[in-house]
Length: 111
Image (cartoon, rainbow, N blue to C red; front, side):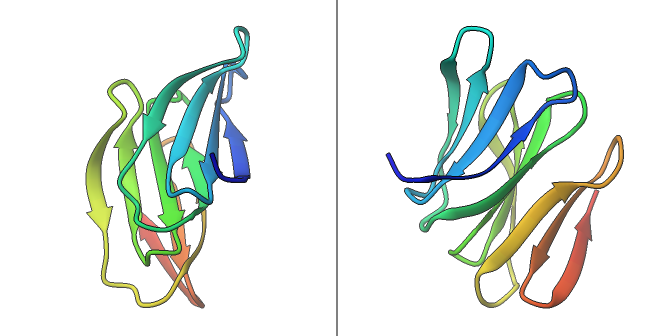
């Protein structure tokens, strides 16, 4: 397993999402200390992760030049956000229902 990057907690503190150099993100149940899901699909390291307030959706940004939107109940990818050249820089929650993802110096908002 690669180095964890940019961990994010759900608002209630029960879940933690981590990104890794191995191209995956992992969802952890903190009370038990167990990995309860693996988000797979990126072809390079996950630079940043974000989770909505309720812990239902997540966004990941990767050095493969894509962002992905995930359903955390199923760990399935809902959308691949492509078309931005270069490595992704970050992802973050920007309100109760929005997740933002940024590439290079150009901000891009995904709701």
